[in-house]
Image (cartoon, rainbow, N blue to C red; front, side, top):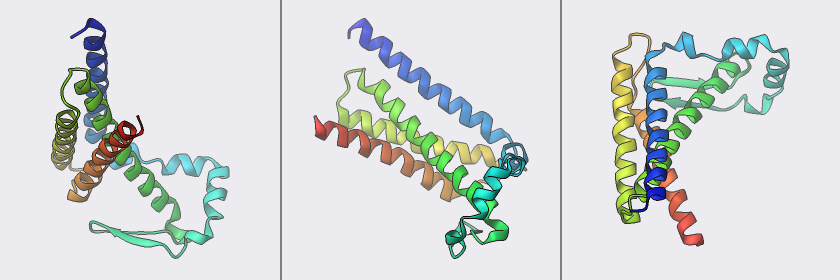
Amino acid sequence: MKINALRKSYLWGAITLFLMIAIFCSSQMGYQQQTIIPMFQRHSFLMNSIARLNFLSGIEFKYGTHLVQFKAATRVAAIEFVLRKLAHFFSFFMIAWSSYRSLSYQKLPHWYASIVALLLTIFYAGFDEMHQSLNPNRTAMIEDVILDSFGGLTAMLFLKFQEWQK
């Protein structure tokens, strides 16, 4: 293997490790330390913009045991919930992407690198939820493992789509 490919593999591996450490640290924080609702409340522009989203009023869904409603009284909390879940999805999308990139520079077959990257992502999603279950200020949910795993799967599908384009 060329030195340049080895460096790229290590760089992508370091990015993967950095993302995993960031998620681990984030999982140690309670909801009150992570909420962005006070930021929304400090900026009247954001609050006014959210208040105008009346077309969202009829939307509600269950996520695990939580009922998420976009009616006026709970709209800010619902938007924060969606943003937090998007952060879950994209964090694990990036773990899968970066671990695949690291493995692909090791001259492994693409299918093998994809499977290992996806399994690593799913394993880490489960580990993250188990870690959260140890924090009394957090709630571990199998739905989050599924969402995180779907983020990893989406990354693999996106990479496969890129390969097909070549």
